[in-house]
Image 1 (cartoon, rainbow, N blue to C red):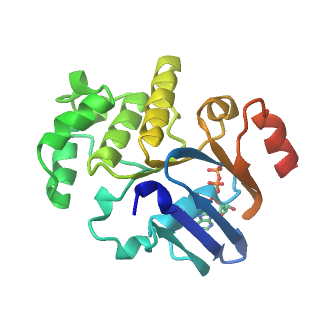
Image 2: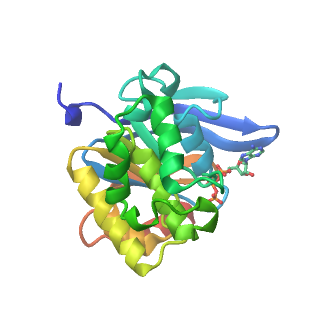
Length: 233
Ligand SMILES: Nc1ncnc2c1ncn2[C@@H]1O[C@H](COP(=O)(O)OP(=O)(O)OP(=O)(O)O)[C@@H](O)[C@H]1O
């Protein structure tokens, strides 16, 4: 079976309530390999909660999610299947980038050569031995991405990864994610920066108030902002 014949992420009638707050409401969509899929919606639409459920960090109230056919909790060597950059990514400020990556690498049983490789992928070699406590927001985003890439996963999940990146960093991330997807991997990215997403995404999933409002390919010439405002308005 080739990578492209398997759905990377499947979200199936997913629901989550926190007390009286309905965060995610009977949400279903698929994320294919070989494409960048944007996950869009207003503040509080349920995007982060959905991503956290896909990653097994939040338990659904109903429904479920799978990565290449299995719930996250049943994945064998999960870091080699799926890499994630979440909004809340935190690092020990006293560790260097290399020491942080080394601790994750050892825990996951990955080859030591992966560290140099991911530092090069995110262009962070020069800061490799500096303390993360002194990193800028953009550098932290790069380190979070490097951590997500340690296991060479075929699925990448990114929650607002462009936060803190300067224009050159944004352009770099765009090129990186497009190349990563076009190698056959799946990328699911949540963002509010529609101008960036317009240039990156092959497909779009739009939610508001926890419900699916629109999903499909982003055709050449389609104006994402109009599509988004119509779907969420
Ligand atoms: N741990 C929690 N406890 C209570 N309510 C929560 C919790 N996590 C999320 N919520 C609520 O669920 C709803 C969806 O939040 P979520 O963070 O998933 O939205 P989002 O689409 O990621 O928003 P944003 O674009 O602002 O990041 C919101 O009303 C939020 O207040």
